[in-house]
Length: 512
Image (cartoon, rainbow, N blue to C red; front, side):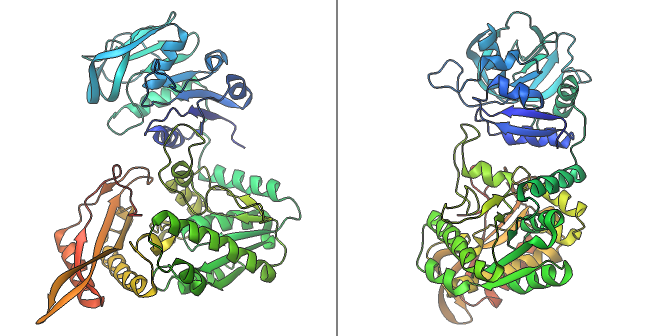
């Protein structure tokens, strides 16, 4: 299991997940925990250090999240970032007040004293600020080590107690030397750098083996994407033939996807796969459904029901394996901290008690890039591993408005055109996602000498590292012109194509 790990207490910052990613990129495993986690739990939990995230609140505001004061007495190094620094100062006897001049965006940090945390960093160095309050007086025992033109106390540390605070965000790319700072903190925690795909696969296999036991049988929900494929391979390595993978054609898959899955998993990877064509069942339940959350819940419910029906063919099984990822968990629940719920995911949140399965989710704490690295470690080919993410509810959440088979067929064909052209342009690996969305909007057009009144397709293409944030891709105009021309000419029922130029945030990557 993980020998060395870092605990990150989440106070609601939009950057909390980036802190976890940066630690993992430095080969130290990190876990995000609720801010109320007790200091004693952290001390006994095998953690080598604690990071307090930023957050949108004021430490002195009513209802603002607090940490257990004993976190600072647990004998572990603690790094407070932004709100985390202010909270550290507030608890330990410093003074926090509204800043005379708020800082949002770029700033220059000057090193004003020798600092273990800032070792090797330039002075001045660019940092990213996002705060309205500021620590005006450091707690007893702390030395001020960094300042900006408007914040006299931008970094502080108490090396004897191994307590560190910074007002800026080292985890974002806008702080170029943030990696050095985090590496210095991990060194202060005496963390071994042993987190990598090989160690993860080994640990995940062992966890599955312990969970399932010597006789337990597992069903894997195989979607055809890299997440469920890596899940299936990990579980298969752990329990062998006691795994049966089930692939459900839910009627909202991409063009020719069911056949591609059959060839890849049953024929090439030699996994034991039960193929279930439930497309009519799903589409019957989805017909006329407009609300996106309702679509997701219908698909989740039918997914479970299909598994129940599949049990007669599979035989008795004790566990259900799913390819749930960390961003799915973060966006679906706020149990880890005060972060807001964005949307529900059909494979997150547990199973109904009427279903006798226990849940196995070996990828639940991984980001997408980590899953891909694990896939390569497990021997999957690069072309498949770097396939773009596809939502669990499939085309149902890309077919805006009421669902019906005819509109899904239009979307399927348009989406295939987008994929073909993006690949032909050599951009597929450079984009996080690129796909078509069918809008519930008709507009007037002219084809030949005839008036048309047909649907609109939106093209969505984004660049991202992990799906938590994303920027719209600046695709070449010539490529957009080819995609538009092909869709309008080849896909019956479409006479207009538009391009989405929204980033996440404020938008999400998917339209629903």
